[in-house]
Image (cartoon, rainbow, N blue to C red; front, side, top):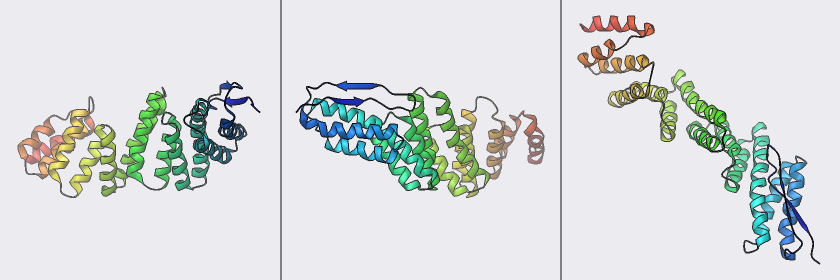
Length: 270
């Protein structure tokens, strides 16, 4: 006996729409569709774990050669990604970060365009103290937010990634600064992150590399480069490049640093 299968569309955080499949669909597809519809009902009822499991079952059952099941798969992936987000978030709030990470990643596999799971993944990694990976994940989340038209969230994600490096720098955890800064710079540029990395490198005597990152910070700073110029001057001073250090100190004009720069110039005989 043929039956009408009703498939609801994306039950998004911001609303939902519905699609209805007609009664001419083949009976063999009812199983995948039925699982999906049950999953959607659970999602609407905020029974997220059950919804997540049912969406997965619908995808496993669906036949990719069936037109109806292709529609089931499309909808199950979209709604499965939403269910994954809530499963992950509930797990993360319960400090089960491993379960959270697994759920968020499954959500991303279902629907790479759903930005919320990128944010959740970054938060889960941070909760697991995988700080360098978390920095990169926050940047990836920023890109996903930008693509989704969420410019404010994109800025928050990038600021979060940069601030994580700043916190490690403030704690003088130089090994962590190096790991996190390297992860950050793989995904984007930041004058401050180059500055933090320069300090970390200088701490273990890597003066040439420290100088390179100080110069990069100066290059990236459209305004307010004096902090980075001071750093460059001090690195050059430590390398014994008196002329270079004096030249860098003379470029400093910010009142916060200028008196110290003048003092250093005098000490160096400039």
